Image (cartoon, rainbow, N blue to C red):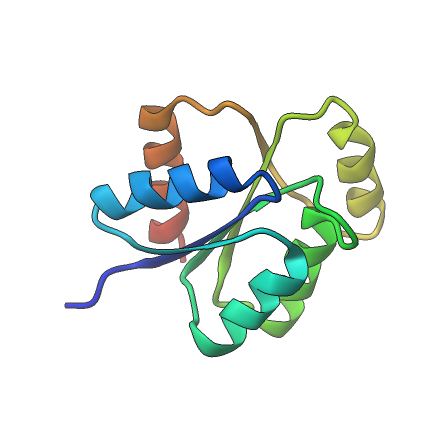
Length: 124
């Protein structure tokens, strides 16, 4: 049986790389990307089951990437993370456009993060 695939997108490389290692050790197949554009390149050739996206990314926000993924790759579950207070405004703008997202505050305790990931991957 193949492992569930997760892409972690965060412009802070240490966060992307660390989460990729943590999820690998938990039994997932992972890839790290450091921008929305790089994530789209990875996704084009490696279809993940879940995308964990930092909200604040250069050029294209994680929210805009999430909206794009929902329309172009609806089978990919999306989870947003953020360490910025300004995220609330971006979430509100997305809601006005008809998109609702839960955002997990960084740092997310690893046991809680693993539970959220498991739940996201189990959802229909």
